[in-house]
Length: 476
Image (cartoon, rainbow, N blue to C red; front, top):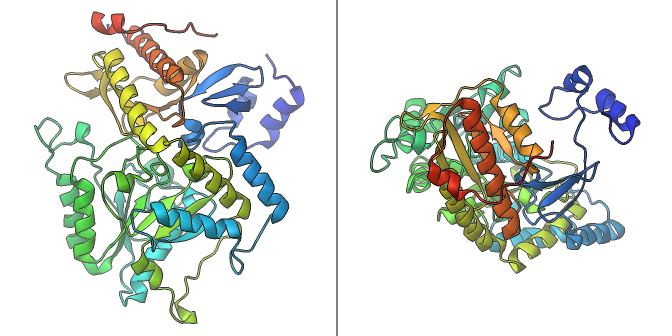
């Protein structure tokens, strides 16, 4: 089979370099690519007109859904008025208005100051530089080390890559930025200390303090973490964890960076994950949902104490810049996007619809032998797959991720099968998703889980089988 236009197939094989993708697969296997052409609401359509429910919101970013003319018009209008302004010298009106709007919703208060970039990796890179520069400004030149969590993903530029907790991504690019240290993640289901206990011990937070004491507090500049960790599958920290991290940072004079590239702008049921947990970090990195993917934009939001450190003499300025940071059209897109989120109350809808989908997932496959854990927050969910529910033995099945992805796609669903920690299925649709599309996601996921059970020779409970209704037939 060939795509509609053979020339496009050849160009894809010869000229395109997709991210994290072995492009040789295209030419060596003759695989027919799925080229997405358009989107509407929660659905995307390929070159053949086949529809898929996008249960990953692009890449955790199309929060308001596809086909929002309001955002497109805002971009077009701005491009006609002023297509570019140098962020080094001349602020644009959309940039100023967006910074003011972010300050209104910031958990750090109305004095929040925002440094704009173009994406999540740049935001993390900027925040790390900002934290280290801040420490030096305060007279702590030795504070250069960072603390992040194992398995966490924070981007791919060299600084961001260094704080990444995924060794498979880090390996092969060294030497990395020195001083990056890593601690255990607050993963209750897999915790050696409290997985089978009645309550969490918060030992993972205590380990942060132990590492600081071991390294020497005078050498640590910043701690960076996601309020809800993506890599590993929507890992929600136990009660008190983020508050404890905040207290540790205050005690030792360490900058707390909340990586909200995914969690921000309603994904976990509030404007920010930090807000949802009632914690005010010192710096917030954001991207993705700030424009719902309609234009590239990222940002670092800084608390007043850090921002003020760079407002003195000429020598105090933050020596950092990005050519397209705060691009006028991207800022216009963000303003229109945030207006939609507020007008349609998508943060609260994320909480309510997310809770509904979690309940339905639990009812549909919560007792399946190969589903160990169903977790998440807002519209940010994951199902962890196991070989055995009783022992929580991880599922180690050859080519499992590719098989799962293929099964979902055949049934008209795009989501993520990920094994960067233990195998999980990740679900994070647009916050505006219609109830019937959410139900369809549940039905398809349940169908694939039972197909997995048949593949592995396990059997679902009859209660789970009876729970599943209106399962669509695969389109093969």
